[in-house]
Length: 123
Image (tube, rainbow, N blue to C red):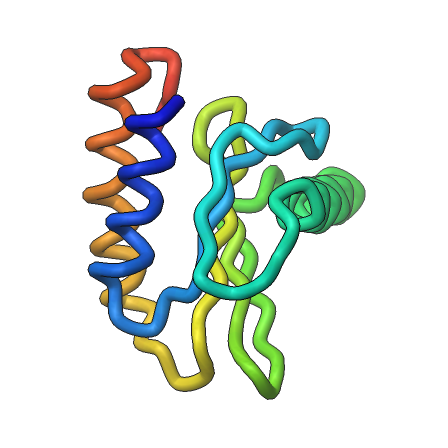
């Protein structure tokens, strides 16, 4: 687990505008977490899981299928939520952060995490 959290920390510090990130289970439990902002890991995991669950339900009811990603924008920043195998990745950014750069960096981080945890992490 230490290697996973170290990789999340590196993602946050190396990616301009990223404040924090969480890997959560679909049930809302914290799998791994790192944030420069004062946020409880369990709160971040529960938030990401709950929002993803609601979006998944909307996809089912509307026959659109499961969500590929969720973007939520606020005055003070944005939250991005993505399914990663059986986990959910949540990313918090500052206002005006370029999502393209975040996604490129996140893909690289996820490939590194797959090496750390093995093939159980589907991309």
